Image 1 (spheres, rainbow, N blue to C red):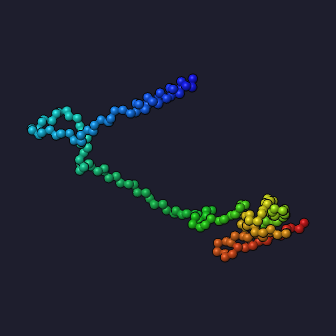
Image 2 (tube, helix red, strand yellow; image 1 turned 90 degrees about the vertical axis):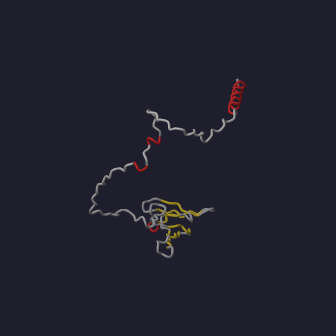
Length: 175
């Protein structure tokens, strides 16, 4: 069955290619028809069909549209803009940091985990949410710089206008 299908497809392609080639294109039509010799004007037929020139009016014959006055809208009075609750679009956006605007100063260091490969700090927020951090991680408005034996050091990003970064040291709470 497969050879029959292949033969049918091949013959269809051959027929298409043969049909596509063909006769040469017709010769071009001359651009202008020969003008008849003007002898005497012939009378115009009574029921001659209208041409485009007869339907289209002359450029000066078009009448402009009549003037329609636009109704005057009264000015609104006592209009004011209340920006309450909206930020100024021309000021840079506030950077809230990683965890919902969390501040490092409100967290407490609950543990330090040391292994042969890495050292991790366990930090807890006032909400009781714990974070496991390694040096270089960001928590709220600060970046963990180093983990000591019983403390961690965060660098707090400077506010616009402040020249330097602040450092916050969190000590391990003794129970």
